[in-house]
Image (cartoon, helix red, strand yellow):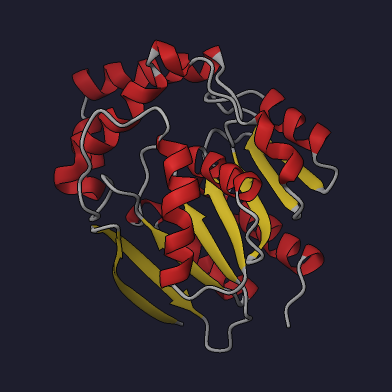
Length: 262
């Protein structure tokens, strides 16, 4: 397994990345899009395990204001996921010279993948793996985000996140938290992007997810017949952490069954 690390320069902003390349890779690259508090390091060894099992290249990167990437000004715009999906992500694929991609998104990253797939006619896109995607705002989501805010202010959560984000920790947390709790964000909805998605989709969600209900997945699968849905018992908001083995196998089977490697 060959691993390379560095920084992409997107419109003058340095974004950290890691590229994992098996010894004899397929021509497909799995592009990992992290959650609202995630970054390259917070995926831990999951991308490497995916690369080893699938034989695909795996690219992870941290969005601006996360991990070792350059900081970004606060507050973030309410359109931050759209900005990432429609402006930044295509440039990442360009700079990484990716010809065929599956977007593997978690939480906010899964929403970014949906926007990209439904908002851009990009022939490079071969499929979507969406873990705990957000399609619209739910009270359950907001309640958990309010709880996270209290924990950040009163517990060691900030210290624990700083291990991954360093000086970006406040940027990462408040940039995510303030947008989701902004009253003007209540009408945020991605359903208009679904009709234009024409690639295979794998949906994974924990049955005990405290950041979203099954209605998120049901709405996607109702409109996209090419969708496979997997509900994981005894699993919370992060399938790749809570049920790593099952999630890993599901991704590998999805790639093998639904996608052609040339």
